[in-house]
Picture 1 (cartoon, one colour):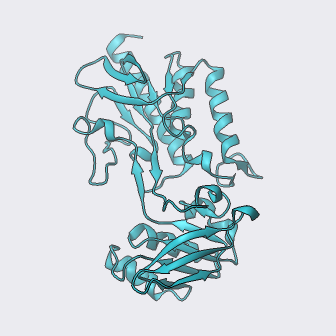
Picture 2: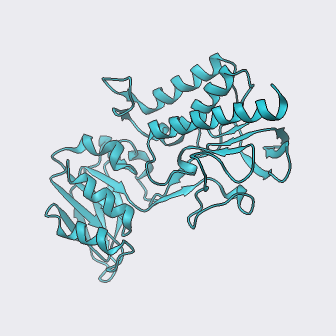
Length: 304
């Protein structure tokens, strides 16, 4: 069984299906993963003109289905990994599996603004590496106060004319070295004690600016920008494995040798265990690794 239908899950499905292992993919609460929320993807090898994120995901699924992978639109609500075969609660069904690949990803933290979701992929993004290039020569805003926000802001200075880093407090969670780097960069301007009230303009299908509110004075203002990048972190979709698999302080699954969890026969790949790279190509690569390890595990334990 494979939990998740992003790049990692689809790649694992393709490899296990071609190995005649009859994979069942549980699509999860966010079918397609982060790529389903993006528009043009220009950094996935093999597409010199780029490809739309949802199209890339759809192609991966069709390729896996061609070799026999089965997909089920459902959520895994509980799991018992104490003995093999493992038992998982999927919707109203209980399913057992000898191996499990967890590719459930990590969901970006959003601000919950009125127009935010409508502009994802149209100037609202949680991945500077993925989308920064599209805003070359533009003014950009980054939201957050930790290392993630500083990294996003510093990366975006390669493209943007100006990066406004907006934080709700005047103190930062970021490490001193990252904060100093951001403060010393002449393209980065800090706007503190401020929150974003809304992002505009969904009617134009592009970001044109932000409504800001100073939390001390209550005064609102407008900030013209062409993009808003969220640097407030991600939430790994691994809560059902608490107490059964090792996790770091933020809930990312801990793995050894790239994809091994502490439970034999259970593997984790993609963003649910990768807090560093979070790219489509690295997720796909780890999905391949997990699938190959599943094949070896089943050969050793079942002789098939």
